[in-house]
Image 1 (spheres, rainbow over the protein chains, first blue to last red):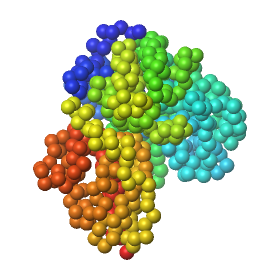
Image 2: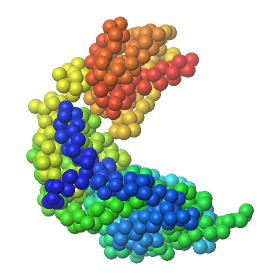
Image 3: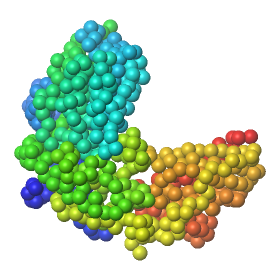
Length: 424
Length: 152
């Protein structure tokens, strides 16, 4: 377990909620609370260094640029990337769309021969999995529609695990993109990245990883994973909202056409045509969320200092308490793997279904006990449909989650069936 | 009574357990309208059918699934507006909307009389996230009425 005094770093955790109860915050999978160093980094930027970055010859402009690019370096080293392999995006959804739209633009001829390697069309295939967040499904559906390519998906089993049995036929010579999540935002299952990447490499498909639920919770090294692109969310990794990042292999980023066009991203502009800067600048047209980037850099440094190995271990222990506790409650079903054997492959998430009680109603009773959880489909309708439900109640942990929080969740959950008069 | 108990009053729990008006009725009325509404935050859906007989709301039936608040609310809606005149049903809808916006404070006696069992939803007004649940069936009813009036 991480040190309890770590909670002092998070001012919000000290407040009380309904009925004056202490807050038990278990909705970090949706958004994480922020440590003071992140809040201070943003405030300090505005109070001491605010200026337009990458232009202007004055001191403030230099300082602001240094902080902005320093944050890029911090985020890059946090995931084992080079600084020019990190592109700022307004959120992880935008980062995924940047890749999908870039491929679409290349297919429409934008970027010319330099971008020809990304062109796809009828006869080509894009492959995803059945466990994707909508953000890593809908952009690929749109790309398929736009280009005439076919969308396929790798199914999951009754526990939500990606089934690799038919991988060789689902990811084949026609597959140009394989997009998948690193960790499920519903079951918490960590995907078999090695097997998926190996197959994609064998057929020459690009790999796109959704790192939203992995980067904040376990050590992630993009080079070790050998992936081509990865989307990250700042606000789920203790950073600010309004910023995320895309990792892309440098040679790919330098060839992928942008999807937002404008100033700051261009080399030479004539009335007829434009040439773009190299990555990451070519993707950063227009004013950037500078203070937010600085905040994301501070979050990366904070997590690095804690040590992602320790973070992973800590959240596993929390998950074990939640999962074991839930298993004891009659009439409550855990979505995802049940039992100890699989505990190594799961992040600190427990999504549950209470027989006969709608997730909204479950969440309301938990809220009354001060326990904040996510209810609904968590932007993942296909997986819930696969489990035969429309939604679930999800508790998700982070560095500041305590064993007491996990027990409070289990205790409040245990009272739900009685409150609604089911299972008597 | 805690806020939670105020929201989940017995009358709501009863309606949620045994919802009225469930199952779309085939109607041979001239003016029939239907509406499908989705609560995008949770994926709950409702399909509601209205049949008009002149100025009377002759039939209100629905199908779908959702939380206890949305199910109880559409059940109460069915009980209240079926048989009302169009004008009365407009007033009922307006009163229910006002109740949702009253932040748990309730309404004046006249409008509460109009709402009957539906006044039990007063506690929902304290939980902004749940107002959408309670309004799901009512939004479908409002839209279905518009469709029915177009159906000549």
